[in-house]
Length: 216
Length: 117
Length: 140
Image (cartoon, rainbow over all chains, first blue to last red; front, side):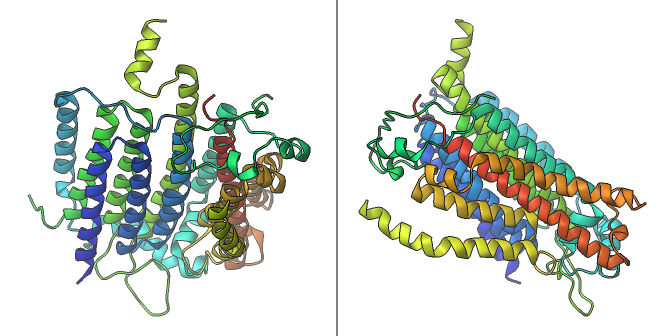
């Protein structure tokens, strides 16, 4: 009874955040709003009875994604350059046409939550009925992920590994500096290596930093 | 058109279009990546809404019969979330390298430098 | 330095708890929401919290990136290795029924090993991503 109300409320918050991201020029604010967007979507997933997905989205979206975006922002610009005046006609037209086509395309879907929808009839029904005796673990999502669709999960793990290799190839890893060199540097371990800059300090002078890794 | 029975889908499409607009109309590369990621998250909401069953519960088997929500979209979206963050990490690494090569992350300034090269 | 003291003390209390929770989520993924991906990300988040507060150099001493490159590959190897093992036992690729005497026991073992591989790879890759981003010299 109260589920649609919570659902609509969370989605309304997400719309407000999305519109704020469009308008905001301060990129640190954009990163924070982006993290909040992910957290609210985790709330929507919970209302939709998707516990595993909400768990993953909260950990990955509000955790790792935000850290990576903040790390990028400390190495690039902090503010977006103001765009030219006037309404951008072409992007708005493209977006509007795409949205209209999508709304038209989804208008044939069954009612939200319909138990007789075709999506629930074939494979998913078989998994739910037979997972208990074939595999014997209560969590059906884990049994489908690791056993029934285990091959896809192998591909997914390979994709994560490849992304790690790609980022190392692009950015390189920093070699650990020996203790003596760190002690005589004149900066404490906190001042030079935190990702987030301290509030109000604009410059990040880096005397005596060693050459970063990136060679073979 | 039956609008009020499909409100989740319409709102998810609206959110996706806002993310798409950020991607297309803004020149800052970091903001483009953020818009793309918001687009992705809205598509996940669309898929998970398709798997929702009225009167169902989390698909963890309990003793005694119960209706469960469809676990198949959950599995697919779980994979998609993790792959999405992996590709976003590669995109941000590219943005850092672009900043070091061109000294800017605004798209038109990058094109300007390429043209005058 | 004063404004970091509270964070340091609290994080020294919290980081072991976060790691323990990550292990709980990893191995309890059969009975409650969880599994390899979530556990890997939570464990990496604990280490990243340590790196944010105590410096990247200290973290590089604890978990050197060379070790992490090995464990990232090790996770994928465990997963594929389980698959090849089932082929050697006479079944299909990733057919866990062949791993033990009867069906569900083999499935339990197969799912356990596979989720372990996934968790190890996800932890290592998330940490390597953080090392690559945070170790980059700013304003170069």
